[in-house]
Amino acid sequence: MSEDNFSIWLPEENSPNNFKDSDSYLQWAFTNIASMPRENVDAIVKNLLQIGFVYHAGRCLEISSQYKIGVFFTGNELISYRYPNFGDFHKDINALIYSGLLYNNVQRKDTASITFKRALNFIEEALRQINSYESESTKDLLCLALAFELAGHCSSCAGNTYGLEYYKASRDYWEKAENLDHEETENWKKYKVMKTVLSCLENVSEIKAIDNNDKKDLLSLEYSERIEKAKELFF
Image (tube, rainbow, N blue to C red; front, side, top):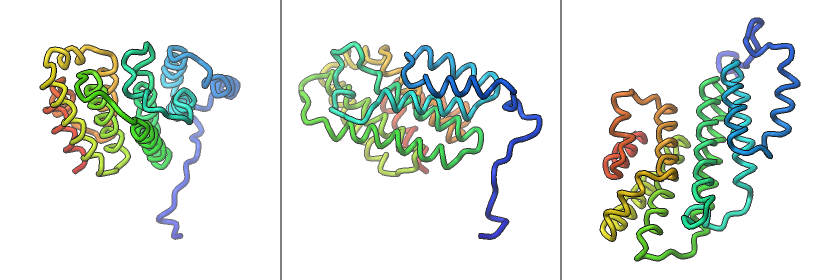
């Protein structure tokens, strides 16, 4: 390997990360972050970002999200809209994407890539476990539309072009739901799970360095406009 192709990260003498009391705080955060409720995790991540520990903030998010997601998938994570915790899985996937964005911001490109692929793997496994759904249920169709859209977003930042197929599937389910019940489809634009999926796409737009002028269409509440714009991120 030539020297021209090799680089290593070294700490800077006056880096804001060189706080003398930082080790104990980070040790405490990493030890306890997995068992903390979401609001506590968010507070710690915000604090770490404020004091310049961007990589560590991403690491905390990654650890917390993976712990909450777990290792077993049933498919209910994506379609159990009747349960109070519906949407938590989507939030954890979004948190993984955001942690990857933070890694990117501090030039941890390989770590970011692994995190993006892991997020995609989790949602793919959940999709594989969906054995059935009610084809005449607008809400079931909307759950699937959001699930495939989220898979498309994860594919985009993971660099997997078959995410285009996920977007196609998402649009198909959106259209089926709209044809069954336009009013119910409109109502879902107000729900937290919809905001989470849009937040994930916004994080992807940051990863892809999309100009603010293009984000308006990309983050549209109209699924057809949003998905068509999101597909452009693959090219």
